[in-house]
Image 1 (spheres, one colour):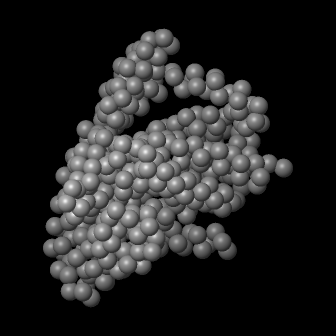
Image 2: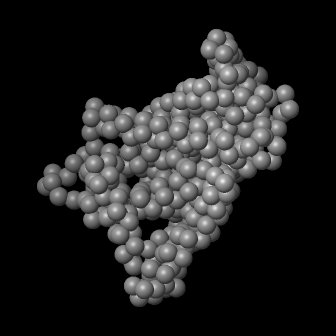
Image 3: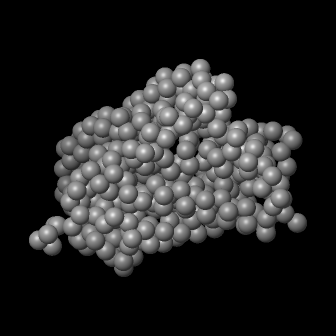
Length: 201
Length: 179
């Protein structure tokens, strides 16, 4: 992350200077910082709501039930996470929310899943294999109905906007699968995550 | 018919989940209100926790966008896309999709709303936008919330999947919509 951060800022300044856009680059600092806080603050309410709902789902055992349903899949994908961990159920809930296009619910639930994965992580500042995999799967943005895009298409009078559902689903499913494969391949030769010497978590 | 089913699912997915969670909780005799508010307390904490990570990523990307670098990249990509007979109007979407969600929606609205855009261009742009997520934002929010700063291969895997998505979108749209 250090190099990415350095690159983003220093490269932008150099490129901005070359293009004669240095004033724009400098003012982008202010707008970018303001936007970040606005996004975070707008998350507070909906985050509280879904974390509350997820707490009920967890205490009632619903998460466990869902986790058990998708166990055959998650056991292979997240093989480093104990089968009975709440992380598994949270991951399942997070992808269901994503699939149905419930973006507002998906982010808080995804964060909750990440927190559960963090509990199994030994080195708390470095992402574990499971966390990298979960993130890569999320960035593929798997959803059944791309509601935002269809909304815009309807707005501009595009003929029969639902015809983009099938190709979009095809692309997102393959990209999602690809993300899993890539993450699984990288985990083999990347600097390995720290493992607990006693072997227990 | 298909559209009706899809609309119904979109409308009922969220209410159905809420009814399921609450009813199951009630049946299992969970004190709903107390447990809800107890969990909801963390909402504020999580949202505040991600601010530093969001600031780092979003400021960096805002600066990069303002620097004019995307115009360079666009100029490099243009002959390549023309060679493969891909509309060059989608270059801004290819460049911003992984970096900024609001910018992507803005660019997409421009393309869709522009009467000069062909049906094919709009469709391709729609599939590209709909089939992917803003990788950098997801990274900042999810890893930021738990304080991960060493991300290992997570970003690279996400970006490669985005690239695969772009190529697949071009291929499928060519097969389905370009005759």
